[in-house]
Every structure is written in C-alpha cells, then in structure tokens.
Length: 205
Image 1 (cartoon, rainbow, N blue to C red):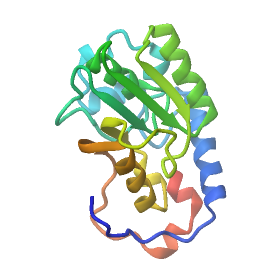
Image 2 (image 1 turned 30 degrees about the vertical axis):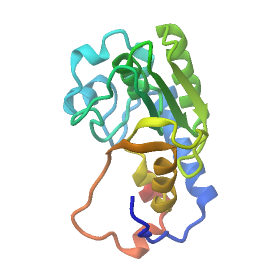
Image 3 (image 1 turned 120 degrees about the horizontal axis):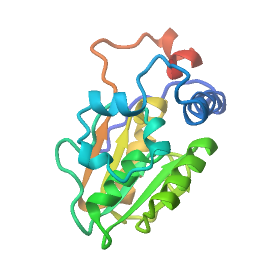
Image 4 (image 1 turned 180 degrees about the vertical axis):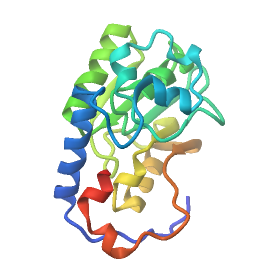
C-alpha cells in the first residue's frame, strides 16, 4: 500500500462516533424500524448474497445487516484462511467468512457499537461458530496483531471515518504480505463540499 495520505476532515471525532453508535444501536435493537438505507434480507438480496451463504446464519445477525456492498463478490475467503472483518456490525459477513474458511480457518470481527457487538457475539454462540471471534475496537486502531490476516474485509464502514488513511494503514498492518484487502463501500461521483463534511448528521444519514 502506498504512503499517500488522504486529507483528514476536521470535526469532533468523539461526537461523530457517538452519532454513529446511536444510529447503529437502533439498527441492532430495532432493525424493522425503517431507515434511510436498506437492511436485512432485502438488502442481502439487492447485494447478490447467495442463499447458501445465509444458510445457518442466525436471523438476528441477518436482520441487522446494513452493508453497502458485497465483499465476497470477487475473491471469497478460502478454506484455512484468516479473515478480519472491519466494522462487523451484527456479524453477518464475519459468519459468512467463517463458513467459507472452515474449521481450519479463523475470523475476527471488529466493531465499536456495544449493541452490535452483543448481537454478533450472540450469533456466534447460537450458530456454533467456533472459528469466529468478535472484538471491540476502532477501525483506526484494530485489536489484531501485525500480519495476522490473509484477508481483510470491510462493508460500508470506511466511509464513516474522517481519517481514512489511518483506517487503511491499520488494515494494511494486520494483513500479511501478499494478503487481500476487499472493501465494499460508498463512492461519490462529485467531491463533497467542505461545509457538508462538517455536519455530523450527514455522516450518518
């Protein structure tokens, strides 16, 4: 990964993270409330998740799915690989990856929202996924050792940090040499005005 730096947006990071946690706590606790984005099985269908991927995934994990793309669309994790899921939410991608890597592989999901962590850990237990683990942490400071992962995936999360360079450096740090970074996220066709970047509600909405 190059050393180029992406400009950091100057805003209150604690306030932003609090707003993001509030938003995704609602997705975890009341997934049928209705949001400005799709969620759950409907979203999985829109993003071309295969039915076989979702089999054996606890419904509690599926219903709070709020990704923006499909990190498995190009090169899915292989048997025996180690995967880190950055911003795992309720755990759907973590558990799909755990199925793909099998008993000889391992997956670590990382998230910062307590309600999502609880839901993901519950799904790991109820689904009997012994090769998956959920850890609390930030994308800018991943609780994973250096060069641990064969694959790092992230789905709809990188757009939520103003310091994308820090998050990408962390993904690179935990990735082994020659490993794969598979990000599914939001792209814009025109630059976002600086004034809009200062509005916390636009980051979550």
